[in-house]
Amino acid sequence: MLAELSRLKTGEKPARISALCLRETGLPLDFVKHSSPKAILQLLESGGGTQYVRAVLLAELLLQDADVSEESGKSREARISRAQAQALLAYSIDNLSPDEQRLYRPKLEELTKGLKRGDP
Image (tube, rainbow, N blue to C red; front, side, top):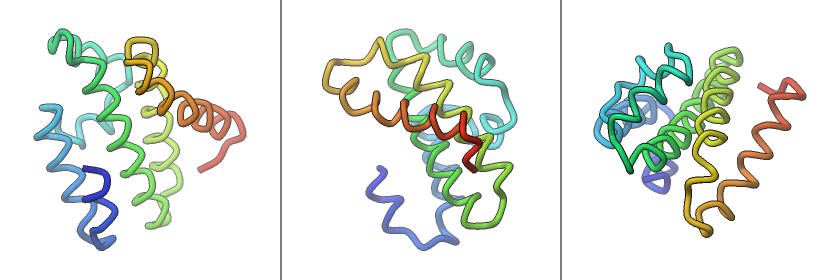
C-alpha cells in the first residue's frame, strides 16, 4: 500500500490516501484529520482485535498525508497529522507483534522527537 502511494504523482496522492483510509479502516480521512486521537481510538475499538492494526494503518496514512501537506506548504496541517500518527502509534505499539514493534518503535521515537522539537 505504501509502495503504491510512493509511485503516485503528488497531485494524485490526496485522493488515493483518502480512498485507502476509507477502504482499509472504514473511516473517512477528513473525519480522521478533524478528530482527536481519543475519538479515533474509540471508533477503532469496535473492530476488536483489529483495532491496533487499523490504528497503525491510520498512522501510516496520516504520515503520508503530512508529507503531502508539507509539500503543499501547509505546515500546520502536517504537524497535526504527524501528532495524530504519533498518538496512534504510541497507543498501539505494545500490542503489535515483536517484528512490527521493531519496525515501528524507531518511527515512533522519531515522531516523538520531531514533535518535541517543533518540526513541521
